[in-house]
Amino acid sequence: IDIALRFLSSEYLIIKKGERYAATEFGKKTSMLYIDPLTATHFRDSLENVSKKKKHTFGFLHVITNSEEFFPKFGLRNKDFETASLMIENHTSELLEPISEYDCTRSLLAIQSWITESSEASLSDSLGIESGDMHRMVETANWLTYCLREIAKHVERADLLEELENLRRRIIYGIREELLDLVKVKGIGRVRARILFKNRIRTLDDLTKIPVNKLAEIDKIGLTLANNIKSELKKVRY
Image 1: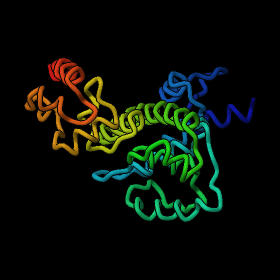
Image 2: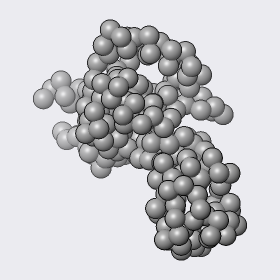
Image 3: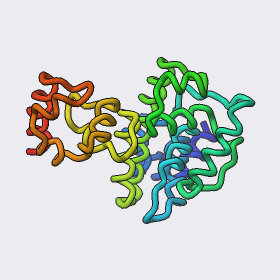
Image 4: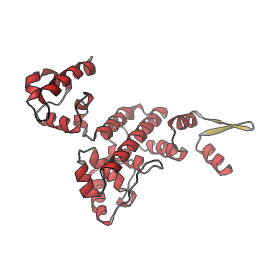
């Protein structure tokens, strides 16, 4: 108990008031989020390294997948080290701190691949991660990204809130950032959003302007869904 109290006190989750301890605002936030104090302090400390005016996507994913709560967590196999090294090289500018492939998990590679629209079949072939595990990782990453955003709000990093919310939605849908507008519409997921994007329908305005019969002609849409999309679009826009 003494060790736990010392940790909570040193990390400013609690403060001593006379003979008793009381939760700080940060302690209350941690409790409300139902996350381990180790995770909360890890998130808070990681945010101190975040610079302004650049993307941090891969860095945020590394922090999330390395946290105590992230599950399931798969270690790298021998054949994954080259993939990890290449991924780090391609996303160095997004890191919150320097890392090597030894700091990565297969879960990190999978989530990064997922938000760049790798299919579940591709993730199974390349990383050996099956559909059920991928769905659990998406659920956990969604929750932890929300927690990271709430802690960013608590430490007054308003500049990070939009990026973290966008990342959370990208994790949910498994999409690149350019599709975020389209998936706001019910009935449009990662596959249909990409098809629409390839057909030069890239924003809600584009969806509004295209006649319903033209929308229906697009692959995987059809007249029924086209009408539903037009109806749902009104709810999103107004």
